[in-house]
Amino acid sequence: MTDAELPALLHSLLRAVGNRPDDIALRMHLATLLMNAGRSAEAVAHCSAVLQCDPGNSAAIDLLATAASRLHIEFGDVVTPSEFDWHAAEAEMADIAQPTVADLEWPESLLADVGGLDGVKQRLELTYLTPMRNPDLRKVYGRGLPGGLLMYGPPGCGKTFLAQVVAGELGARFYPIAMSDVLGAAIGGEQNLHEVFEVARRNAPCVLFLDELDLLGFHRAWPWPDNSLRNVMNQLLSEMDSVASADEGVFVLGATSQPWDVDSVLLRPGRFDRLLLVDPPDAGAREAILRFHLRARPTENIDLVALVLRTEHFSGADIAYLCDLASERALWDSVRENYQRPVRMTDFDGAFDEVRPSVATWLHSARDIVMFADTVGRYDDLVDYLRRRRMV
Image (cartoon, rainbow, N blue to C red; front, side):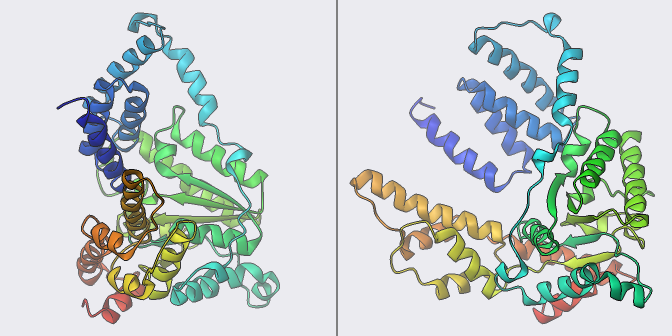
């Protein structure tokens, strides 16, 4: 491979990893090429991302050590393994891992800002927001504070955005935490999780959003990889029970694309006792997503109706990537022809050849699970959705 070809390959791989961030083999291939191209800092970052998903990945560990060594050489600071102070590095990482108020924000988005998804918004209003907004009515009917809300559905369909909307509706801070960050923290996972809840309590009212909950919610009957995961699980149960028993203004939301992998102990009353299916984007939602991602780009004769029809089974992330690819085609033409060309429907025609809808795959897998294993009717909303789509 020539030096001229390498940047183009790296660009393509970076784009592919952005579209498939959990593809470990692809990310490792990219990290190797980056290191060999003298971009060791980027290689280190990708190795770290792999280790967050797979802490025991020996290839990532070895490549990380090599890339880190080269990084020191590139910056003129040669450090041999025997000279490296691992204890000092761990102490520094412990400080970094501690969550702070800087991680919190005040969202301004409301339900009215969500395009389409009327059924999702109605269920969210009735099952969660209305009880939260009406403490006096809760007392009249002897209803305690709702426990946590677990949102589930295909990846890339707006669960994080809806969590922000909940915070906006409740006038609360928004504190997003990925469980992979908790499990991959330099300090003990259970201590880090406790500090997460403490930060939320100190900044109440606060919506604490725990993403990737299935990474932690292993069925207890299954073999656990190690005791540290069990300790984090027990810590989460303790924190959830504490939040449910005290009116501290902390509202816990979770998200997962694999709710059936979450242990039922997490779904008991007072914990994540409400499940909300976040449907794939309907026509109204897809139009809103397209408008959002094209709003700041030069366009010409874009047929939104046609694009909405062609993006059936596309997630919000798929649509965003589609718009990026279409814009990229216009950009390259503009560079070659030395004038700013707007994005056109022909650009989308080419982009559709490169993007495959991701929702259908999830729906088919989910159908097999809920139709044959959901003995308690936990996923009735999903069954209803599949029936409306004539998939069952």
